[in-house]
Length: 235
Figure 1 (cartoon, one colour):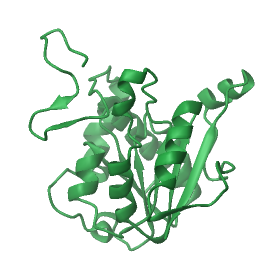
Figure 2 (cartoon, helix red, strand yellow; figure 1 turned 90 degrees about the vertical axis):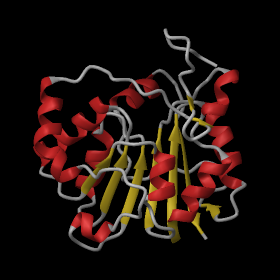
Figure 3 (spheres, rainbow, N blue to C red; figure 1 turned 120 degrees about the vertical axis):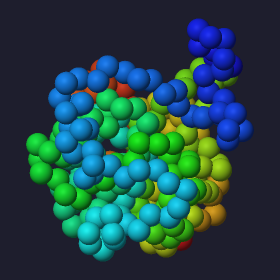
């Protein structure tokens, strides 16, 4: 297990007795990101609580709600939310610069259908999201943890998929994407093994129009790198 300078493990959380799938990095917070957190955080950020959140109250309306795990710097999240104003979107991210970046985009684009939770996704799903309350979920380009000894840290594992599927209403969907072929193969295996989910394609799906192609993805495609989308429906 990796260690920090103090010699303590980076990934093991002694309070929850489980290995986390991410490393919390403070990162460099820009002035604009810090300002966005200060000015827009109170309106668009939802505090983590060990109690189910009333999504209709949070958004001030009742609408299909999509949850995204790990939105990074938020460009894709903002584009999707802007393209589907009739839906609500909840983004879960642990890194502060990413939260600040997406809040900045929310302000610039005047998006009203996005809310952010800065916390571990497993705990959010377990304690805040009611069973069957989501219309869908997005997991785009999670860390592939490409070294074999780190594969166990990958987000898309059986227990997480089962938990996530239980939070999606029948007829809803789970959309994952990765640019790492071996991880795509694992995702396909894990998602196919979940009895609550059914693949919309024989193997990998065509990229849905609502998922924009990122600059990083475009660069990879030009270099001949692959991207794999998996879209499963909740039965």
